[in-house]
Length: 488
Image (tube, rainbow, N blue to C red; front, side, top):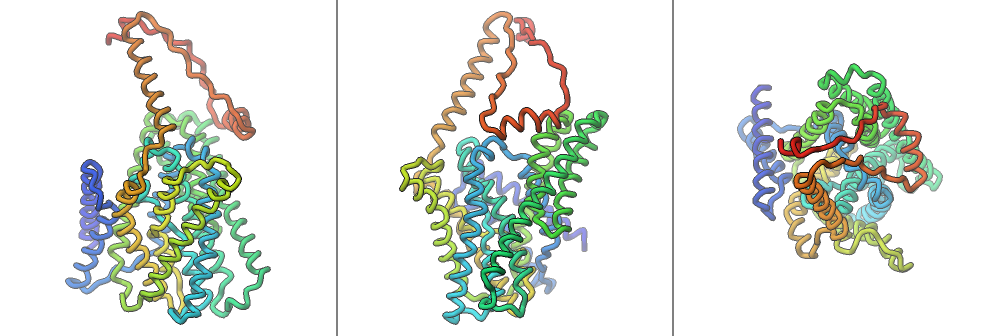
């Protein structure tokens, strides 16, 4: 039986990869790879139900303990750090501040719908539900918004997705801790709300601290143990184990494993990666990317396989549709509020109106994390809560992913002119420089110019932090290239 399940899984992933490749090269508008994975999973679920009378139940421990860490670690380790940190304040605003504001708006609206008699949820169930619905999914948007064409917009969407997932999980855990089955909404005072907020901030800071600790251990270990450079497999294995250890340590301390693992992955990429051997450098990037890609594919297929475990007659349809409308409204408010403030004070904003519309649209999609959190809710109305979340996840993922490219064309999204032009100019200069080497006699290759740090943190990082982790490499004399060498 286990062999059959493994074969089915391999077949799903095989079809997913080939379909994603065809969609990419043929530029098929109205089909997205995540939708393909979900429908493949639904087909498997139907076969299991009507031939073997079995339903596969979503296992949150498998998702949070194995699948999600692979995706997050690959994202942090292969992060384009320059664009990420250049737009960090935008990422912070969209990923953290906007998520908290969205949680407040959704909670108020859901409580209002409860008073209208649309659902019979308790106040604690309402808050748990709205915390899960804060988790967005920007995977579909990132497949369209390529990094080379939209570096700024890509980094904002990518960073927002990471922080949004982490904040949503922290909000869910904070609410779950303080909202017991016997506590009504009227008994929640301002002081308790303040305590929940303080607990949320504490969890964030400590999660980042755990990631920094494991990243520091890795950087120092690979700096001083030179013999590891002769064993790329061991280097790659140690990197993977240290990253996973940071995730498990944070989860064991009831912190955010996502934030810890992402922070650890970024530190590993900045300070540990240069100390690895050449084989390990290329091997880790390729291996972690591949594992993260397969885990992401399996997550969508797994969602499809488990859809039939929720009876559709338990879904509160009117309430779910209204919540989707409120989600769009909350997203609009949070995305366009800050640019309007900048406009009032006549200050330029980093994202233009078309890019803001893409950010708004991509944030309407709810992903597997929302459903995985809902499965952990154990209340008298947990089945209806899970049905509501499942409907919203499937509807936004399938419809939103399919219509994303049409939406971007409708608003006239164009390549970021300034950044892409500078990139093209840089490549043109490089190609011209290379051709001159081939046409002229002996040339002296000048070492790359050192980037002058501008901010206090950049100076601190370059003068203190980076030397702490960097190996001392003897400087080489400039190489002289002759015509004979160039002709080879």
